[in-house]
Image 1 (tube, rainbow, N blue to C red):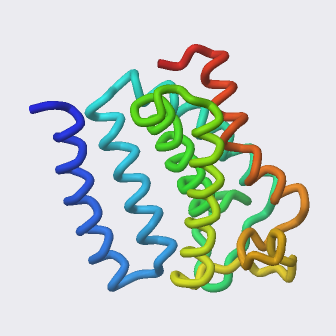
Image 2: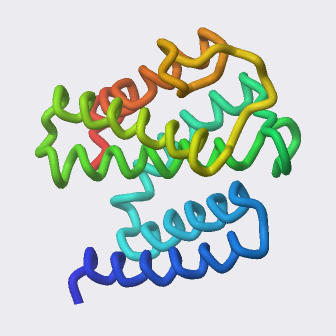
Length: 175
């Protein structure tokens, strides 16, 4: 069976299991479980291919989550001072972005930036307005769009993380 098909079958099973977790636990915990399971499964199937992307994405996520304190309304899942929800979410999102850049957008950097920003805004909108995931801050949203309620530095990170991650992984010749 093709690796991609194998991964899709696995991802569907993992998604259904995450829905069950969501029904009995916090949405942030369910998303941590979903994203972590998808990353582990992608590594299991693709091995070194995803492993290199994963390490760089994890370092990006670790930088942002160790520098800025993420405290959400409701439950927080923290190790030391690092909140696992944004750590795992950023890691997963960046690995996914790299895969889309390579497999779908044929390494077109401009299309990737547009895709990244549209996806970022959509995920932020869904997280804030539909899933009710809010930081415990009073920062205004980005351009009054109702998304990315964070400090100016964190807003800049959000907007630049994807393109910078792609440039760095290209420079490092991550396959």
